[in-house]
Image (cartoon, rainbow, N blue to C red; front, side):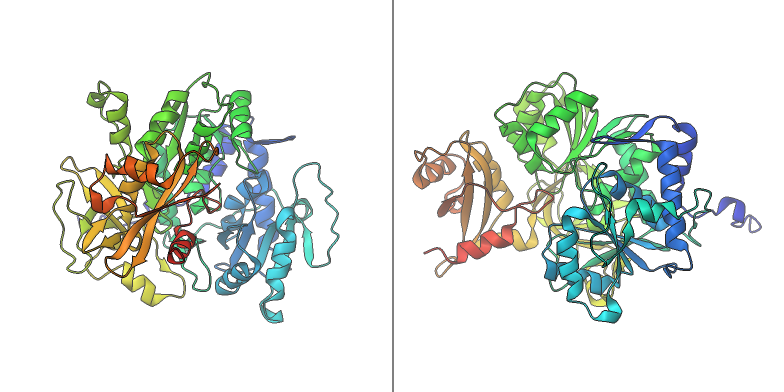
Length: 543
């Protein structure tokens, strides 16, 4: 037995980049990317990615293996192609949220030491301002991305070339750079809300492969689905579906801007079968005034924030088949999902939605998930009531935070677990339910209040469109719950007292919001998450 050792024939490093090569062979003439007037096949996408990778690898550009190349853009074909092309050159892919301001963007470019940035034309002035803050010797070169039909001439000398011009110099026969081993870094993603203290999550080829295969297996995604890109590709690489869709030869419907009319139009036009969306997007779709029953079911994977059962129920009434998962940028995608049991089919719609709102159980490819006391590190009871910090162990967990050994050590502890900072309960059946971020738990007179639990009640009120609950400082109680609410109807008849009285019928007295603030829209990130840090600042200024 001791002679049966690893051999080059059985030790090829795991990487998702080979999915594209296979797609070109199996699904070569099938559509890969559709956007406005643009249509590409998988053969064309493979060739285009090789040409971009070839140009990136050229000696004239001077980008070496392991150096960072950034991408700043929405869900358009070029951004999808770059998810493959950049790492195929041996460089590390870094997607950046285009909704950051210039200062925050400059911080990320400097921290990542990005050598080249692909910039969508709508973000060009923003990126030029961000680059102006950098020292001359740290300024990256810029390549401009255009939509099909736009003027592709360069009007600014700051840009090296256009995307199509950059591609024309490449070789479609280029031998893409395979990783020397599967622990080689492939992706650098910054967690949402990054400002002056970047948290750059470094994922290896192995981690990306594990999370991508995990997503395909857990969602049972069939061959040749039609996938609508409502989830930003820059958000954890679209939860890994940028690469997963190549593995199954999907038709990717690109969407520059997320809005309800366009989503419903594209679903109907292209017979969309799958999409991923944050709960806020589902809420937007269910509140759209001209919403219509879908002609055929669309499978939706939602994650990013605990979805209220009411929102899930409304979405399913329209014809969306909602699945629910949980993961972090640090896990490369979803590692927990609410695996459905056939015996739940006979339950009523409200009971089914409540079960489906739980995040669920670890996915098949992932190793372990547990709840631990954040101080003692001991496992807490799996009784559906005892709150603990969610911890993970598995192949898709990050290598660590880039240039942050202290942050890495704090989350990837010596006990062998990755501590997420999220708080939850584990039900007796082994299904996890997220209760809050540790920083979002409200401590009122010594009692812990889950902001998510209060929000879930608010969403059951038929007049409430959106709701978020945060801590408001209080001299007597330490903190009290403060609710920010947007309404479906803005006729001025709904009062703060009515909302509080509604909550009193469904919550213990100490959990009822002491303040209710009405807003037209709640502030959100580009991925649909409500920006609670802004609401906390507003709550501090309330009398």
